[in-house]
Length: 186
Image 1 (cartoon, rainbow, N blue to C red):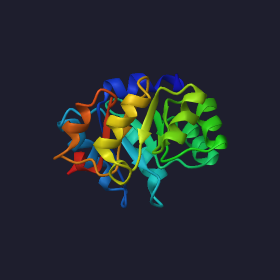
Image 2: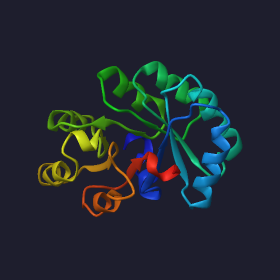
Image 3: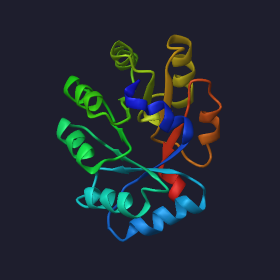
């Protein structure tokens, strides 16, 4: 299912989401994560050095960290993920073109959803794991509790507004398998 995303989220309940502004940030972030026994990182595509940072993470730390790419919004982004041989893909939302590109990539992927209609669309694709984003804007814990009563088979990885003070509350929910956030590199 979803090219094996279950193995990623089951192994990594804490997914650091990082935005690299300067390439020299890679080493310090990787060393912090490894020191905290965190085994993965999601690098967002929000800056002009993102792909260079992803390549450096893969080259220097790919044996100790699963390297993911976040903010994937186009099939072209997915093509670059394949070329970069990343370990997983995370999108903030979905489209038919993006969904098909992620599925055809062979790379584990976590599609972003926030509404019941998006979740139902994902179920139609056969997905069992979805990113709930941005969690804090779409009801957070309360929404996920309701979603559990509606979509018992779906496991979520909420991101957006998840922090050191609330991540445990999310992980205690039956339908949350992992959480993502930037607080993990602080």
